[in-house]
Amino acid sequence: MEKINDWYFCDLSQTTSTNDAVLDLLKKVKAPCIVSSAVQTNGRGRLGRIWQSQAGNLYVSFAYQIELKNLGHMVILSAVAVAETLEFFAKFGHFEIKWPNDVLANGKKISGILFEKNVDDFWVMGIGINVRKAPNIENPLYPVTALSEFDVKTDRITVLQKLVQNFDTLKKLYEAQGFDNIRKMWLDKAYNRGKKVVIKQNGKEISGILHDLDENGCLLVKTPQGMQKIIAGDIFGL
Image 1 (tube, rainbow, N blue to C red):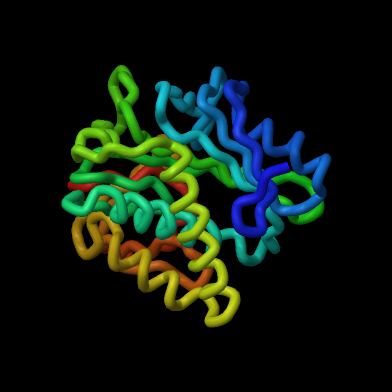
Image 2 (cartoon, rainbow, N blue to C red):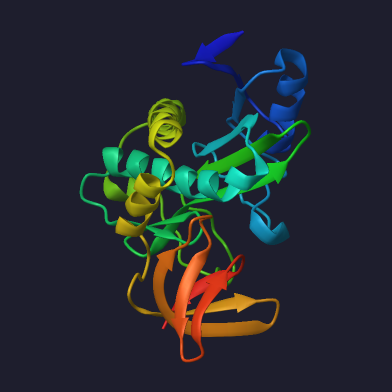
């Protein structure tokens, strides 16, 4: 069994979804673990959306324990880890985090993250990063891009290794100092911070100024009716 830092690790040639495959590994090792795959045949994103899987991109899932009260913190932390990883490879890209944890490169989506609950406080954190090729999506919510479009010549495993390093560093910072520093790092990269946005939730829309994160990682938006706390939804600039 391979390891990356303190994580058990397995890289597959093909799987349905790394979020499913990492659960199989978790049953064997009963410890924090990671599964990546060269090909996903049934990848999924937030809100039941399909995650298109192009060859050469990074598809990886982490299984580890999170107390429910800290879940929002880890969602925010994961986005910072991905953004810092992308900044390392694409020095001239402008990377922003679209709440809660999609990452945009020059305004185009390059990464998404999905958390799914398992047993005994274990959660699965699935991450997709477009390394070699942006997927061809009909009517996307956002235009899409890939690291290769920034003249970055690297491979998915090299990106994964840097991602694990960044995630572990941020997680240690969080465990030592709490959420506030992670929150500030997220806000420094927040898409449309201080600008007008609209949040779409199940047919309802909330418009206002993207202001802050609360102590749980929920979005705070200034509206004409006052400050609104956003727990879930899709955010768009106006």
